[in-house]
Image (tube, rainbow, N blue to C red; front, side, top):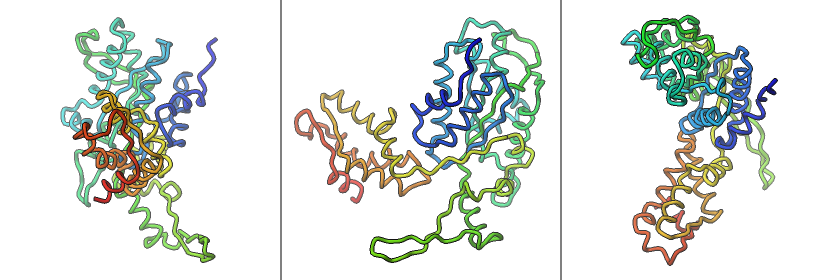
Length: 354
């Protein structure tokens, strides 16, 4: 009997591509481990600002699944934008559209599968619904009919174990019933404005006085009072209801995971270690020109500090700050001395403050 895959093993693989976000990595690793063992596992809802790693997590999961050698557990994973789901609602076929995309993904992975095998893979796939906050039931106090219908359609798909769909010709054609009970849904969104709403509730709203100031001792011996607010500590499901996510919809997600804002230290690590970071791209560019590029620790720290000042952009702020530093240097590479380039703090300061 094959030894079951442990959550720790999955988390270790995911952390090769995901920096930080320990709670989200653990939650998704547990869900995947249960799914691999054929056990029931709940759907997951992730909340995190843009650039905190929601899509990166799902890409890491997809690559890990693709690396496995067990054909019976090579499930297709698709990423669906919530607005696309809303468009499918207008055609009255959101559930069918998702299952067909899972079938297509399964065929991409293994073109030799027959219709029955394709259906078996699709019925155990993973569906990542991105920007799920865009299908809220109301916007600026006005009903959002499209969002309401999209939530209802996704809810129906999640709950409906017997889904009737029209198969494409390459999948056998005709109408059949797909058991969707084995599909794992991971929904994610930035939920812009939620942080401010909850902060107002605990500071000036109905729960005012609940957030206590902490004493901070300075090196000079003075003591200051600071308010430390974490959305994770204060978020209630009622806040999500007020945001526009219906109780019935939220009830289908067993796990609610809040992604952390990226600290300066984490941003430094992403900048240096992420294979898709702006630094790695710049090094490849200069290497193609025969120039070896290096950057000083002080310069890296300054770029990370600049990015940390834009917490709602997450890791995207790193690329924006780095582009400001590198734009002129990359525009005229011949201006560099010889075959080596060192980016140091003075160049970074000049670019970021100019």
